[in-house]
Length: 315
Image 1: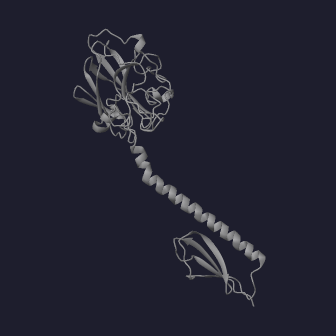
Image 2 (image 1 turned 30 degrees about the horizontal axis):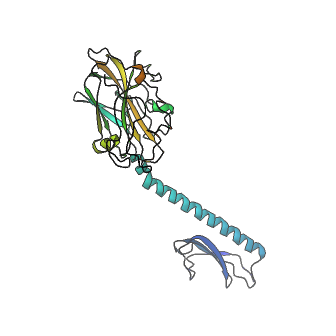
Image 3 (image 1 turned 90 degrees about the vertical axis):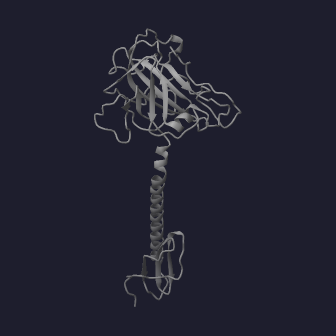
């Protein structure tokens, strides 16, 4: 006489497996249902003691259960793997980037924007930037100031003095450092940097002879987390944006741009402005195909490098 199925607890079949999946087997009237998870014992077994072979319906139902449990196990493993990958590698990916987080002028440190722990209504001179992620093309709208908006403060600096940008972190050693300025004749609040008025005051590309070495401007930032530049001594007083840009070339033909801007007020008795032939628009101060942007530092035997964009104006 047949009896209804019942759940058998702590059922232990003789075989263990390190595979991921499930199986259903028939033997001596017992259908064993097991999830294979690194050789763990089965979760349940269903006793359907019967003197005859299982019906086709029961067999089909067994296959359905098998397929469902196998797929569920796959999803569980895939989810756990994804979470593990994120926990291990996400911090490393974030740490691989960087941004300017403060400025030093005349011995005074001016805090910049803290992307991972921003303070509400922070009184800073730096234009806020949204994240550490690189900009991948020279024509991206974020190239101007990394998407930054007007800051509440500015810092005074005398023409001919140095300004030092300080990075919170930086891990790439191949690529140039470029420092730009932009006049804000109508004040910082309306200054968007969109006109062809950007000029370079400083830059360093390759100072050695091997492109695949660490002899680059960004290599200096990697070692010191700082970069100092002189404001041209003859520069006309006024309000300016100063833009520090790191161009990372460590991935072949995959440039990564990291720009940030701060607001400074230049003082002094200078009267000069940068000549028209040294002015540029940002974005698009150079095409993406420029040999200073699209570079494979590991191939081609190149021993020299020219920074993209106009030459430096020293005043």
